[in-house]
Image: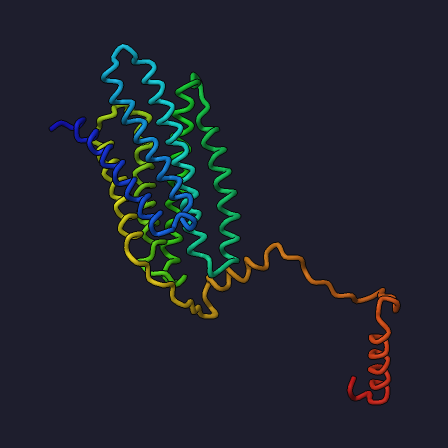
Length: 293
């Protein structure tokens, strides 16, 4: 049994496991909470089925190599770019779920995430330009750079989520942690594969075998976590010195309009008659009893 046969079989196994992941998410009615993860699985399933069918038809129609190559090329790289973006958005959704009890930190993290994502996309496109780079080669370099930066951002954000799981009232049996575990495994393999794929054009290399196994393992992890009942989120009790609490208070205050105090130049007609009467009584009382001043 050669490596090529194993990789082809693994690609179809990946399709079945991906279908299982989508099915268990839909059965558990978790699509709204994990929308980007669901879209990622849908794109992955479509790409796997399309690419697998293209390869099967390719061997039956050997007189049309260019047409099948173009179909395979564009489906692969377009889906690769979509998966990179959806993977990052899925981690962003996990971050929002984990930080839901602290809306200030959630809002601050969202702002930082948007800027980091925009800068990463700009850097990826900029690095793709170079001498003698055009057409298909530009697409390969741009998408590979996007996948690398997306994987790095994903791993950084997941690291923060993993550290924040326990303080945020979640357990390691929660779906937030399970999805994070699978996404971390995917991001790690994508980071290695995106750096390797530019220099290695062999479809049936040992790296592709490892990549396929890692993807299947991620899907199996998601099936397990979504199939099991999730423990309830416990009540969060943070000490007054907790950095999470302090930063949440600071984040909630950011962007708010400051309060204003009138210290001079206030005309009397701005006050109501009842307010003027109260102030006059207070002034007379202070004049009669100066020790109260």
